[in-house]
Image 1 (cartoon, rainbow, N blue to C red):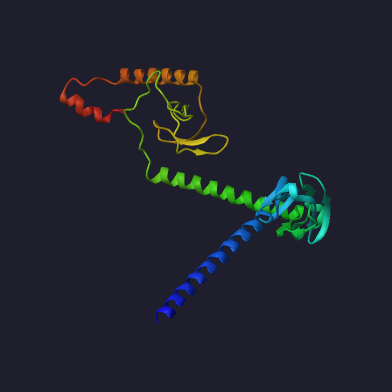
Image 2 (cartoon, rainbow, N blue to C red):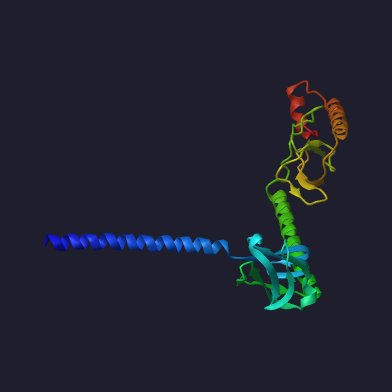
Length: 263
């Protein structure tokens, strides 16, 4: 009985070593094989690229260990495009030269030891000039729709939630600091205010809300000189308004001020 138990333990020990050896060699050969694998990469030099739909000038590039490669034959749908025999292994082409529709790009790699490997194929759809224009127009319409919807949302927010919510009592201060984004001048009321980080950038300017009149306006960054001039002008205008407002002398006069504008 004791002998049988010892043989069973010995067999399990041998089986364990065999399993470890198999795993070791599998991992070793797997890593070695991966080191010798080659792939191709497609780079857009000039033209249109919308996912797998492309048109224009592109470069197909062999990716892998160049020092082991004797030559690379780039293939289009399994047919040779060109044979490159020196580093870098790449080839520039225009999609119109190979017809429109789906194409498969790959490379046949000849190594210095005489072995040959074929890379996995990349699938692309070479579109016509007409199809390219249609897809570009579709993209531009989508972008324009997003911008238009955003503007509508801003308008609805202004009309419903921000109507008449102006900064009453806020006055420009001469020489004030406008923050990292700088200041701008409202084209509606002429008051200078800080540019907001949440303003909508529309390339030609930023759609921002004036802190004084509460209007949404298209703004650009103003120079320090222009900001100082706007500050002085608004301060002078406010001083004139203040001088025109009568000071109530009695309770009856104070009650009458509710009929005076700007009070």
